[in-house]
Image (cartoon, rainbow, N blue to C red; front, side, top):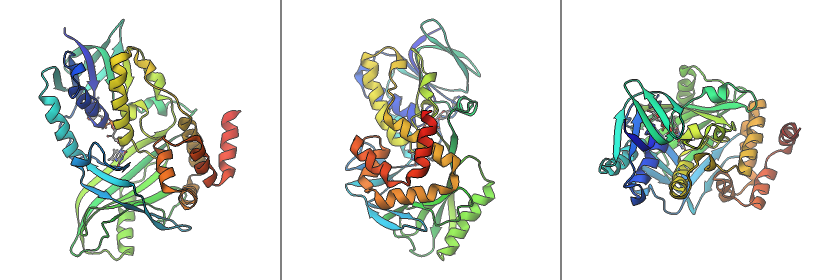
Amino acid sequence: MTTYNYIILGSGASGLMLAYRMANDDFFDDKSILIIDKKIDKGNDKTWCFWEDNKGEWDGLLTKTWPSIFFGSASYSNIIDISPFNYKMLRSEVFYETLWETINKKPNFVIVEETVDSYTELKGNVQVITEKSQYIGEKIFNSLPNPEVYLNQKKYPVLKQHFVGWFIKTENEVFDDSTATFMDFTVPQKGNTRFMYVLPINKKTALFEYTLFSKDLLDITEYELAIKDYLKNRNILDYKIIEKEKGIIPMTSFKFSKLNSKHILNIGTAGGWTKASTGYTFKMTSKKTKQLITFLKSGNDLSKFHKKTRFWFYDLIFLDVLANNNEEGAELFSSMFRKGDIITIFRFLDEESSFMEDLKIIMSVPPKRFVQAFFKRLF
Ligand SMILES: Cc1cc2nc3c(=O)[nH]c(=O)nc-3n(C[C@H](O)[C@H](O)[C@H](O)COP(=O)(O)OP(=O)(O)OC[C@H]3O[C@@H](n4cnc5c(N)ncnc54)[C@H](O)[C@@H]3O)c2cc1C
């Protein structure tokens, strides 16, 4: 049986990005690389958005960029100019197609469409069992979701960012497509953290996503009714639903890195690359896959790739507060957006802020809950 140098489990955002970076770097030309995914052609299964200053690596593939965002709630609403940042939208189909085009040209890659049943670390390598076959790899990069690992523990709360989205097209020009609605908390909160997220692609087309940061999912009709009401309240009555999207993103400070070993590295959401306090993952994945390429050229022990930072602790406290006081999310975010400067907020969420900047953000939220959560974790 062939022993592959690397096996990548899952060719979604993280697995494919890692493979693409390997395909673009001649260090990997003499390495054998196997990619396994149960569904290679996933089309537009996701719409990724992220903020970025100036130009970015994926700019050629974007559907839309916005120079300003709207934040709304009962206590604070504002259109915020985010320059030098832009808020960017990338749809997955063009991303997958473009990256596959590069990977498919490389003779050292093997791609199989099979469902992975399990993988096991052996002495010096890893065995992967699929529904049809088995494979051996020296190093495995795993992006297959494994929710049991964080659901079967009680130390860290697990919330979900869950949403249903409608792409709608209107008869008339009704959208201001220069501004993306980042979070609109003016929707009824019903004891949770609930907001509408609106991405106008042009004056007649927009994505409306009804989103919650909470523990429990809703019935599909509740998300859809909330979108209908939101449109009705804005007098948008003449529209067609042209596409739908839904998603569940885990929000937890569970230590995914403890699942890594010398030969196995968990990547993407399965590797804890999802920002626990927001669910944003895509930009972190861009950054981490780049770092991983550099690491692979020098490091051998994959368990040494992960580095713990102070941001992990901030997210932990934030999630403790949100899990125990889910109805207060709107006020927490409003306070942060009212008092904090948007560039500092973005840098903080990107885990690139200085300690002084962190303090500014931390001081912008009501302290009571955070102090309680902090001392609870400490002792
Ligand atoms: C609808 C949606 C929208 C999102 N929007 C944003 C956003 O706007 N911004 C942002 O930063 N993040 C966003 N996220 C979060 C995150 O960026 C995405 O979930 C991203 O796709 C995570 O990448 P990944 O590689 O970890 O997982 P995935 O992209 O889901 O890749 C996992 C791969 O594993 C394969 N697979 C699963 N099980 C098996 C198995 N047993 N055998 C073989 N293959 C298997 C799947 O087919 C898939 O291709 C969104 C998530 C969702 C669900």
